[in-house]
Length: 280
Image (cartoon, rainbow, N blue to C red; front, side):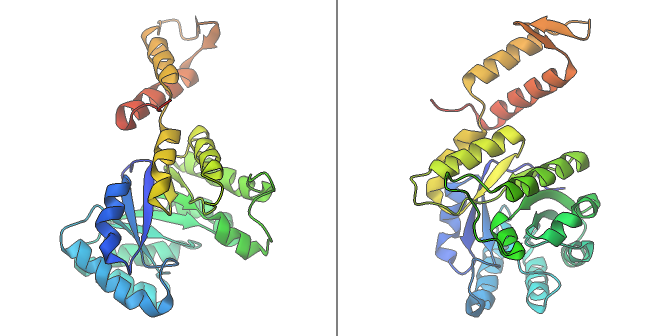
């Protein structure tokens, strides 16, 4: 089962070993990337660098591998198993056989996050999430756009296009049904001073994602802040939990309150205890 990582998860190209420690320090967790973040000519060197880093003692990092159904992906898994890797991020997941190949190489104790980035992956999502090895899920709108032949990711205001919000919601609902934590995708748009990132991160937190992937250290504080409850939310949640009666539903500060509201309040308190409250 994948542990609940902190909300900010930073990608770092696997062929830039001088950045590995910096990436881990700049976010809650680092993903060392062997897949799209590395040019084909550099992939073997990237694999060697990542495995050397893990074998050197850092097993806190996540590694994004190439498709395990390919020769390159199999080479990734063989080398990572030998290095002692335990946390794997799988891109473009579409079949349970891909997951089986990761388990066969790393072992049943693998901490595996799958990423759904295609129409085929969305279609098989319920089966993927029922696999015992899957501990978390994320999604990839940029690859999904390419898969569908779309011409844009966002509308002129910067909001995701409706079919992409539909895919995001489908992933959240499936993850909720499977009781698997969901992590939001990266925000690649960086030329607007962080406005799109802030909107994406706030929406992700409100909708129930537990964290968000990032592509640059400058995104960390925006992401962390979005996932932290406000002090007002925390104070009200604590008051609500202190006001529980033995009558089931009860009136609390003008609102009828019962178990669903209490569950939300408990989650807000737990999140604040784990990652703090939002800065003004």
